[in-house]
Length: 75
Image (cartoon, rainbow, N blue to C red; front, side):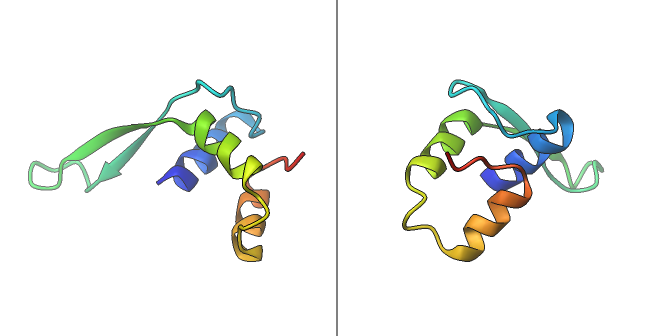
């Protein structure tokens, strides 16, 4: 879910320089019909991005590449 929030933020803002206290809202769920209601989820994106940077060493190369594609700065 946090990756989806990061991708959404990057698409909207053009960067992933997120304030540590930033909260991003993503929409999950169906097609909006009554039986497939959508729900909005607030994620602490700024804290998550900061934690990914601080803990970059144990991340898999695939994860690093995925995050780099949405504008992650590693330094």
